[in-house]
Amino acid sequence: MISRLSTFLRHGGYLFVGSIFLLPLWWALSSSLKPLAEVFHDTSPFHARALLPVPFDLQAYAEIFRKGFGQAIWNSFLVAFLSVTAGLAVNGCAGFAFAVLSFPGKNVLFALTVLTFLVPSEAIAVPLYTVVRNLGWLDTYAALIVPGLANGITIFLFRQFFAQIPRELAEAARVDGASWMTILWRIYVPLCKPVIISAGLLIFLFQWESFLWPLIATRSESMRVVQVALAGFEQQHQTLWNEVFAGSVISSAIPLLILLPLQRYYIQGVVGASIKG
Image (cartoon, rainbow, N blue to C red):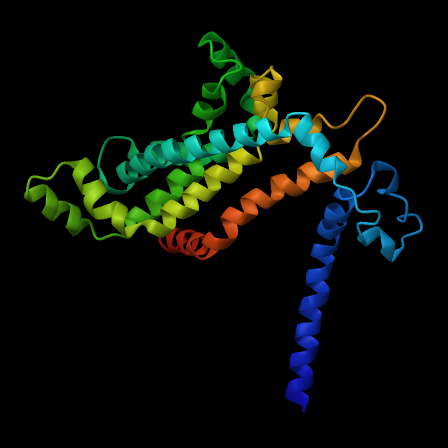
């Protein structure tokens, strides 16, 4: 009896804590399905009706797509997809070099690489803008993709994971005449599925959630990404809260639909890379 009561109280506590995190999200979803005038109607004082989409209205969703939010979703998805594809190749090769190859200054260079993800993006925004402008990349996909390809966190993940693979495998392949790229592709890559998924998700989320750099690097509405488009729903004299919530729901649902099915591999990759320091 005591054991059942303990289990009931424990699960009740889980539900209570979970509801604290879920209620704001549910309120945002509910508010996105209301007219603008009804969003804050039952919040002061708070009433349970605030959590219900009454009156039900899809106008906010129709309006944000009329304003080009669909193009912003496409831009973000394209930038994130290309960044993941190219970023895995760049960071994977870098992690392989740090883990397997021997060259002068390797440890110092790896330390500097790891330190790069401690530098806030705001600190390098101005010099990065100057470089991109001189290359003629402003308001292009190249400006959104190339600066984010090399990532200190993902290089670190790959290096730590590759360092756990017995080096004897690479040495035996070298004796048989295999090139380093062949060793990477035939031996190391098939063994690192979890870290590939983890690194890919990190790059995807980094690009999907990016706001400051796309705001600086792009000018035309056709090049806006999701986070910049969301900021556009705040007008000079009024914030269109139902449209903000509608855009937020969509922009949050897309990465969740990708992350949830892959979370097991994501955890395996991060834990596996952290075992060996």
